[in-house]
Image (cartoon, rainbow, N blue to C red; front, side, top):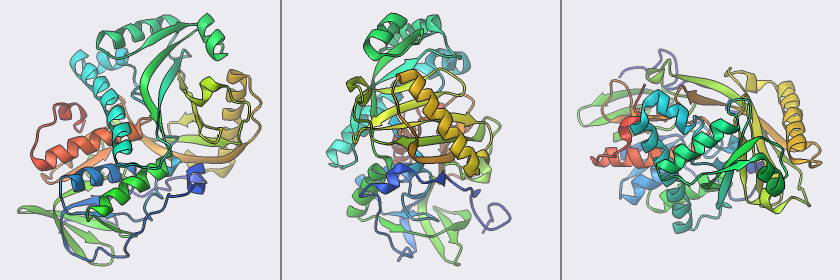
Length: 412
């Protein structure tokens, strides 16, 4: 059996977050699991019990597959609770920029697919009756250092041309309707927000109700492809076999999937105290800006603001508790200046690594050198939206179906 990294784990290891995310203080974020898999053979083994693994397990069990979900941590205790759960159809790389990088055909298809993914996720949450605060919301994309008002106007027109809702707002209208002083903004529909831990736990429970097994903590150390299947070795010496394996380990990616187009960076986030006089528009709107580093925020049903930003291009900066305190103060200062609200200090704050690609698109593909092992990674600021796309592409691939957009997300 081939050892993946020459040491003691199949994937890289990381401290997935510093601080305590707000979501872990909310109810219904834990899922019952076994200490061991109980059986040795499954149709599919999903490695990772975060949002990506949960969506993929839900999709596979919906098709009647016998699924095992593994994690080296407890379920819903990895990177997923670090999300601000701004479930946007807008990709980190604007449509105009992505068109220059990947061509109009790919850029248009990916942006349309992102819109579809958000709507599919909202519908799935409703169909499964998940109690996770899922809400459809419009998004405001503010002009900033990376895109001025005229560039915003051109971006909005390009989106409308391919059938995506986008309305350009000038500075006067932005001030009148939203009380924010910026040159311009794009108002778009088809975004959402949710409690990411409750969403993930609910999806895992749905998969479990259809017969999926959740085992944790279980760590995979080796993998080998066999005729007609995959064998995975665990740290305790067990060998598990399956027809297909899917690695949903996010930033702790497989060494075979290293790529110059992909890197791990750091971000910071917080939850404020309850804001009793929060404007109505803020309760129902997601906001982010075209700046570097950029600020992003949205309200939570209890009238807290969930905000993040101040990203740095280093994978280990998020582990500094002192830096977490300083970044939180910067984010609060930016919020107060932009919104004209007195917010005070954050009640919850956290930091985490996340992975990005040069073109802003995730990698959803078979593992290099394997036919029956898949990896999903590089989700950037669209983790939940891209996880939905990954679930659809992987489920189709395992079933032998062709997904029309799969080629745009291949390993690069």
